[in-house]
Image 1 (cartoon, rainbow, N blue to C red):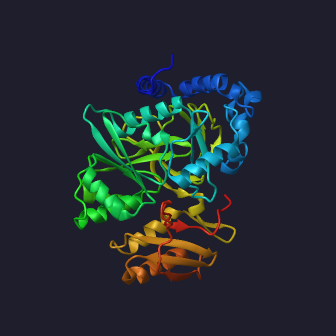
Image 2 (cartoon, one colour):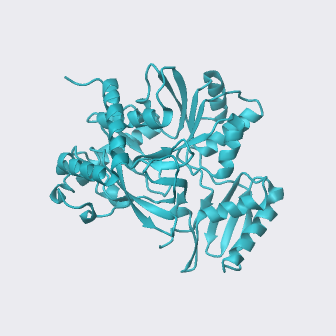
Image 3 (cartoon, helix red, strand yellow):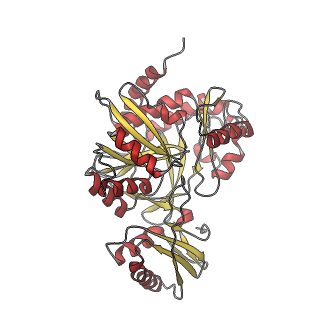
Amino acid sequence: MKTPFKLKVVQYLIRIYFERWSFERNPKRHQERMWLKLQKHVLSRSPKYNSLEFQDLKTFPIQEKKEFMGDFNAINTQELDFNEAMEIAVKAENSRDFTPTIKGLTVGLSSGTSGNRGLFVVSENERAMWVAVIIQRVIKWSFKKRKVAFFLRANSNLYSSVQSKLIAFHFFDLLSPMEDHIRRIQQLQPDIVVGQPSLLKLLAEAQKNNSIQIQPQKVISVAEVLSPEDEKTIENTFMVPVQQVYQCAEGMLGQTCKHGNLHLNEDGLIVEKEWLDNNRFIPIITDLRRNTQPLIRYKMNDILHATECTCGSKMQALTTIEGRMDDVLQFGQDKIIFPDFIRRTIIGASPEIDNYQVIQVSYRELSLFISDVELWEAAASALDAFFKSQGIPNIAIFKSNTLRHEKGSKLRRIHAKSSPTM
């Protein structure tokens, strides 16, 4: 007899509670036990990995998105065909009807910030697990019914699974006009607002000019990098802390703790670190809970900034998701500048700068957009002085009058010419 979906969610709520307790008690032993379980019950059904069964994780190949998508047919455990699954996902994107499945499995596309769209597939059990993690670690359990305004580029059976008698999920399509969002959210009066920082800032502006008057109990930032200046603007407007969720096509990777730091969900992940310096690293993820599309030693394109946290958790804490390797500026063969330095320099030029974008046109040319044109010279001068202090002279900085941001996509404030070689 098939277990009802909501009962599965309850079962997973109990399961992840004990898995977290197990991790905090003994992280290494917990991960080793889950790794063996994954090999026995999941990797044994994957054509790519079944020959590597019961071997050390380090013997498995590291993959980036291109290789991971190329091996889709061999990796998945349900004999799914990439072209067939992609056809369903693309059709859903174009029609905006996200209910179709393949063999009862939910399919979807990542937004492809790096230029390569990713295809993800999850089972009903994985959807139930995701909902349990969201309830336990993000939304939190409550017997009071709450309305959630969820701003997304694309809906999914995964996201709408949150819907219940206690949680009313309302999907806001990012491709719809902003005027429609303003009207709907004012009528809805949501308890929880989830969206990209660029969207949350537009809502904050609408709140300031009295186009809307909402009082959310929680504001949750997803998808884009949340800069300190955007975080401050949103918090000061809605008078609640902005929580962050590190969520992508590769899974539910982390969320903000009560002390304001992000923590990676290492009770269900093994995170290998490719260090860039003493604090920054690129994560290589092995997901210990996925069973339809196993994620083994998947090298992300994100730059994470490690820190210590006093909340008591042994899960890796982060001060920020600094950006992507695509955001790292490279000058010549041996000079790279991480995006956080660019952000700090521009914001440091004037406390009134809150909307900007830097695009590297060539190794000697940058395009700089500042929303308040009167502050452009200050920002350009600050960048010029910073580059000279780093031994990078003669960088031409040109004025841009437009912000490059395609509707429905993630806003990237810093664009590198090409990804640097580390």
